Length: 374
Image 1 (cartoon, rainbow, N blue to C red):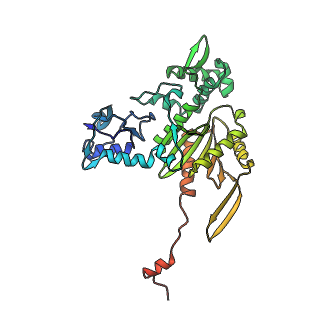
Image 2 (image 1 turned 90 degrees about the vertical axis):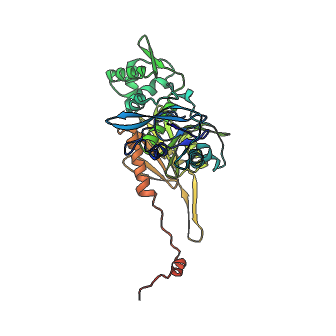
Image 3 (image 1 turned 180 degrees about the vertical axis):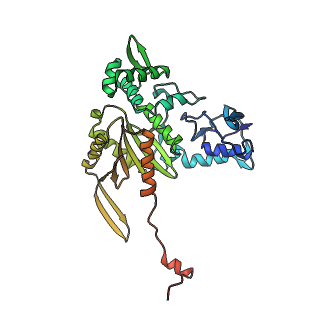
């Protein structure tokens, strides 16, 4: 059964699954659309382009599931739903170009596969690589080799990461199998001379997509702006920005924190995260201090109700430092999995920030016949 998508549009995996369900292809089984999207994620959004997913029914744990296996250039109407129109509407809401257009900015390019350490297939999600990236020591091992100015030995990697030589060798062997690192005469160098930054961005975007139910884009470059937005996420209808740092903590300067604050101010997201991968929370707190020392002034006003002015302030928690009023989180990822760290931030946003103060129009309530006691 071919499923046809409009040209160059993104469709969330959940929406694609719903389309399959409407054709009673699955019944109560789960829909498992896989691959074929620009970001390379198994869920989240699908790139239509000039292509179309063709689905086949496969057996999975005794039940039926759907796997998208190839693309064709067609359009389709399913149960009265125009997939092209639905996809275009979703793109208008959640497409990365549209997110920035609404802020008066123009995206020049994003998610460039050549910046990754590995070949990102257009037809298959690298499941094994993604799972391996869950390990902080594995990420730090690959980052050490990829960011090094020269070749590395297993011993030098072990010292840099803070693990045993045997652990380093195990990580290096796995990275070689995944074609991220190359070995020659007991020395190691990256498969591509691109550094580790974009690969970490891809992984963080994948975690946001697959584990946190968000839409995520990585490596977003904007016209007339130096640097890029490492990861931009859409959480419900909120836009978030994540800055990913993978190098040595000693190399993260005040200027890099200033640049993060500049990009945050320009995008004006509902929340932002300065993520220091493989670094302690104490180091992340130091980066938060750089933000406080920037002496940026903010004024908040509710016309006719209140005014408040001041500089950035910090609240320290077990897992992160929260900077207000800009709703920025500074977090180190060392003792806990990266996805658990981001999940804690999402939980904080939900329970602390998401519920807005309710405002009621009492005059309108009276027009509806509000009954007063007595």
